[in-house]
Length: 243
Image 1 (cartoon, one colour):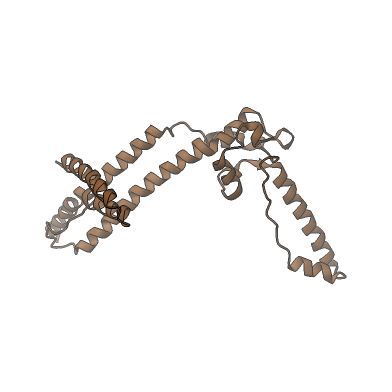
Image 2 (cartoon, one colour):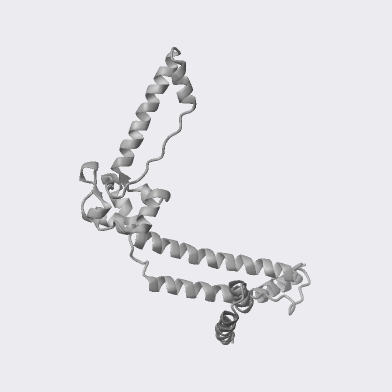
């Protein structure tokens, strides 16, 4: 019976999508989302009478939103894992393949065949996933130079005979490294190779598996919303027997 309801809801969703697209209304996606949520994940407490659990329809909306949030969290986490392991992991696998395990063995993205990979370049600039294991020779030299300059200023300021050094130290700010992907060389330290291989292993991240996770998450959330009022009614009846 539930599967039949879901099937009708899917058909209705696609029908609504067609009507809404044809009308070109600005609230297209919000109306589609509202329709899908109401059809798949509605929790209706009006059909139940609770004597010991103080539940209202607003509680049903809260529980529904919680279930949907968990479902979306699972889907987003699965999508993030697939993106990280399959897309960003291309750099890790390329560095492993070319045995880039030290600064003197480092290679550029062009040498690795990844110069046009915008996802990898974006993560190296602003992300954290690749930076946990991948090292940039130019960035390391830049950071070492900054550290050395700061140490000199701190030493001069500590002597107390150079007020200019104290002023410079007070205004000191670390200048972030600016990547030049045409020349920057990358490597993975030998000690991090095994961890990188495990962390970015793309096994189990097939798009078909993600699609299965998406379908299962939707079905489980729909079943949870469908059976939750019955479960709460059983709890309410149990409380009535023991009080």
